[in-house]
Length: 268
Image (cartoon, rainbow, N blue to C red):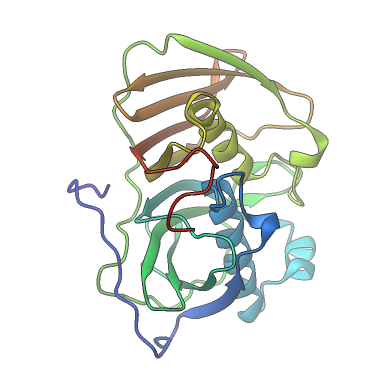
């Protein structure tokens, strides 16, 4: 949900607006889970690919990142979902820059079916990180001209209310395959960890409708992460920490969906 409590979704336009980058994608078996739908961490992987392509178009490619030793890392993410993409659907994924917020770079996203149906709307706050010191930096990164699209997602809230107690516990260890080119656990894995806490007891029966994530401290290979979580109604709250120091926070709101015994939803 937005800060006003209402999810927003941009309407599809046949012509891609100026300043917006568009990617086309056909949902294949590598993109879906056993329910036949694209899980939220795969949505986030597509968003990650989109921002890389966008930055490359403005001259900030991998070679530049290595030379300047500066990377854009995700600080906050919000994703609003009407429905998850399904196997064999043809998607149009659009990304555009929002107005810079203090030192943070803003990106907005929308996923459309090729029929024009709006599926997903999202916004991300990125921060520049010095890859040597692993600290945030004021180094200059290209600031892209702001684009405003009617119905676009709001910038993520910087804070969300959490229950006083997170009575459930789970422990995970960061694996080598979860480390990305910036040397830390990829942001999509945090989301996957959180969503799997819910899926363990409700697999295929629910879809996420809104996701809020805050990435606080990097996670490195081999670290043991304590996941404290609580379920209130159909909302999941997750706090990931190492040695009692917060690494990330997640709030995911779910909604039940009609899934038959075969595991694929009726609309598949």
